[in-house]
Image 1 (cartoon, rainbow, N blue to C red):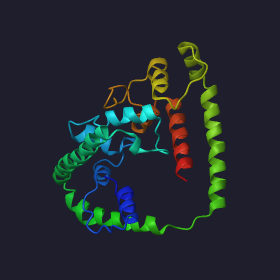
Image 2: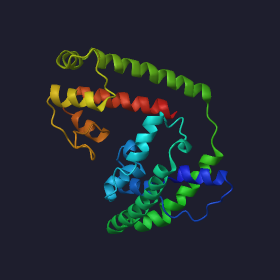
Image 3: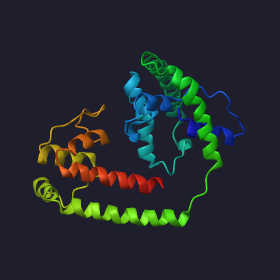
Image 4: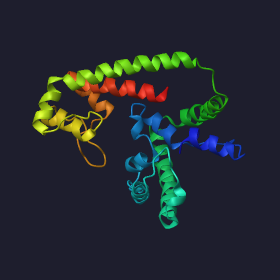
Length: 239
């Protein structure tokens, strides 16, 4: 479902891909370019386009039990009887998403764009990624230092913000972790009494995603600070 992952992996095995005509994540981007990146995965698409949302729960429980992380992933430690239904569901969800999203693209008149322009360009992007580019490492390090200084300033503004101080007293905690959706919800919707913009798909809790915070930032400066914090953290982690 992700060409920039699948194709390099297959090429490393000596398999040359020539007719890569479908990518669920690319199709999802074409349908909603403003969706937050953390919501762009096959697991999320399962909630959006099928009745199989949450199919990965069994594997996720084993990953937590074994302490497996993205950086240290070893599927061989997960029992085969857990893995094969997960793998089968992965393929099933992808097929269902392809059919559902193809219909949506066709209804919006976007299917020719996807087939004739977007998918051929995916192969170009894979070639570009494999070739790579030259970068000024020292300049990137300098930019990282600059971003770290900006982040430190934003964090200090959040720590000293009157709303944070009020939230600490009200919630009875030493610190407020603005990276925690649970604590952020309490600050925004319980302390500040802001009206939720949207709900999460799985738990139906008030959303703290970027789109929601962007709307809320017009009403109060605290969501704006959280958005700035996320933006600089994302830039630092990417580059």
